[in-house]
Length: 246
Image 1: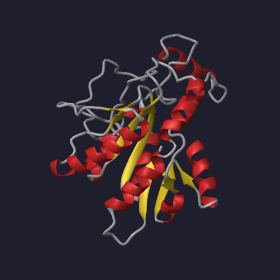
Image 2: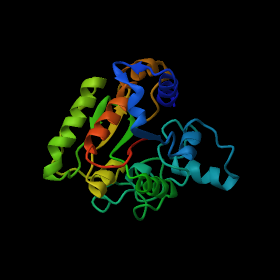
Image 3: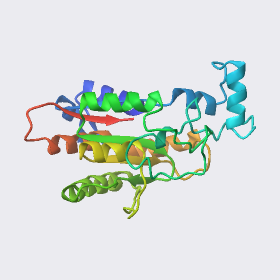
């Protein structure tokens, strides 16, 4: 939301952000999906007011009978949305075989309507690049069964993002098991996708608000830089480019 606000204000003033002109927004659309898991966020923040008594009891059981929900990672149905996409879903192994506060991949890909909605939206706008902001670890994941002819292209975009943010660029895993959004995007569209882990590493909870200023400083020009990359990818196409960030 901070990126959306700052880019809009800078564009209105024909401004620049860290050396990147907002004029790129005349050529490239950046689509922001601010939150894909609203139920999970409310639960993690301790707000259960939207749930019935029966649902609260079910949630308590999924949370290992704890009343502290700061470790909650799934959606309200106990499905981990980061494990809901048909890219390595069958091979995605987890010891969790029922709805849980984290890691339960569901009984099938796209079982969760949140994952279906994001996939349908992605197909509708047909973006050149997809970016998924996660926490935490200050690391960038970019590789999941990328086609050989795309590896250099995708690596170069990831390397530029790492240089801009100062985050570590992950090494491709030989036997990577996906089922995440960017894994699906890479295999479905054969285009670059990045999962950017902001903040220093924290365990099973959210990063503190105190880290926001530092992470914003690292990432604030990232959308404009990737918009330029999206334009370059489709410079021979006669259509307006798209970039999705969520």
